[in-house]
Image (tube, rainbow, N blue to C red; front, top):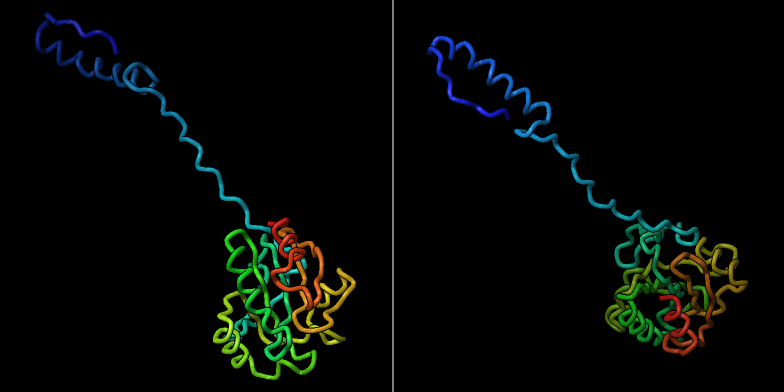
Length: 211
């Protein structure tokens, strides 16, 4: 802004010159002089959130939840290590529920999810309703991992998930508590027989290798 000096003229002349002086100062400010600086551009916004994990083909299925039969899209488990198990309430391997729940409790925070699919395909060992199965799983083994409505896992009428699993591994479930392991990218890694317990070194080692 230009330096202001004392004015020694008459008051009438001063009144005529004052608006012009103020106008000049205003113009200097608007044009980027010492009075005002051109506004700086706003800082860039925070980095956009990362896009959601893409849903792999093997998880693009919807099944009813066991306890209330509400539809559940398996894409909600995209990006996790997934262990798929066909289960039954009255089987010699039913005690594996305990091991599966322990496995889930130990590795859930690291990205493991276990998906249980009750089936009456083998030995008619899952005859009950979805409600009865849900009560048995919770009351007997305190199962907290996701369980789905009773389904078919073998033969021509098997559900599409198990059809994919069988095709990818070359083996369909041969009995209750057959297991399939899927990595975070949706690649079907391996299958495990009913004889493979949830605490077996081979299964646990494979899971830890994927987490």
